[in-house]
Length: 263
Image 1 (cartoon, rainbow, N blue to C red):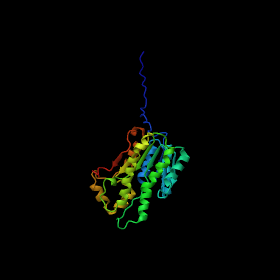
Image 2: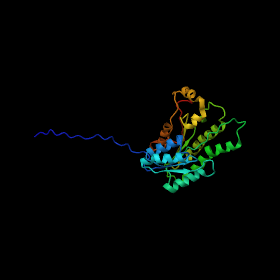
Image 3: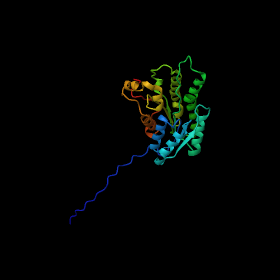
Image 4: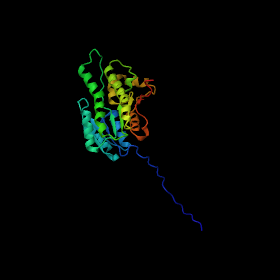
């Protein structure tokens, strides 16, 4: 007996496992630009995320609302990284919510520009406080609450290796010191299986870059090896990878995301 019955099944694409599912993360300076892209990338990979912001309360709220459909828990924490202990305060509030932190991304920074002859001690103090002291204190605060095998990513700058403009000595100094902090902590944190790396973005198309370049925006874009600026999502993708189990053997690295501009 034969049958002409035809059985059809819809093909279903297999769902890739979320590499950060069950992890909790804190991103400093996460309301805008590269920081917001990192928050989105971590959430898209399954992490619950807390992020700090200084003044962009409405932008922070919009980011939280936008990520609500992901099903992840996203919280925004107001904290000024220039204030002593602000990094620790962000950690404390995140711990109050989640109980632990598996991932810390130190992204908050200020752009310190000005020739050395006229650069004020107040501006120097702020650059050191936000770009260098705050990441150190955040790491110090998070370690008692970070399980073995945790992940720390510092967002530096390609300017540590390549600086085509005059007037950024203070900024370059802080970002180069951030690299040194990463190297200095690598062996110390490796004892607990915690990795620490620095991601060095080049020219990334953000509001800050457009403000800095002004009328030179198109000229600088055309002069880049890839004839374009980077996207914040491209930096965030590397950060998310470094926070995953797949990157467990990468530590103490300074990784450029600059489209070849520093070559």
